[in-house]
Picture 1 (tube, rainbow, N blue to C red):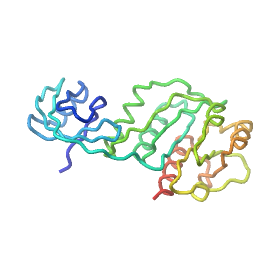
Picture 2: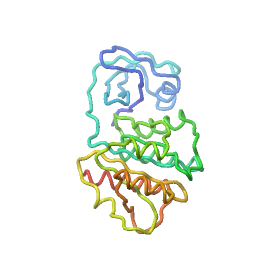
Picture 3: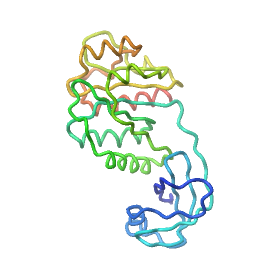
Length: 236
């Protein structure tokens, strides 16, 4: 039986004990019914996974004895996705969950001319990322970057492979054919209503390659998940 994994944001190698926060303690003790002496796993979301045993099964302040740790190297190459958040919060939350499970390293909320959702509850979204990381048994928490304007991103980005997925009727290469495995990659996913022609032109001027995600028109969050799947598949 696999051991449950818990998020321990502040835990670092070399520490002998760690006290879980109240929400994690409640889940561990009250929901999963773990007891004193039982083993657990913890991760700080930065590549370290810790083996431990419960010292104090307090449901508000569960304390564990750390017995060792292993370090998981960061995923390589790095896959980044910049996506315009949708007005419907549940759709972008669904995307964040799936992107984390698939294995994306960085998610950038993209502010475009047609973006309708520019503000969001960061803490809630980070909790979704943590839950998805634990569910998929990973040790690296994706970075949820600060929102960035389209213009700033395309002008500042220096990622080796840069793509823009848009719906304009011009020549585009399927992503899985345009992308080379083993190289850090960034893809831009537009808002409901797509990027403006001016934004597309600016991206192309800055070296972004236009790509297609298939033959059907996709919702923003669906396009994001498809892009994550294809990027991951190219890298095997």
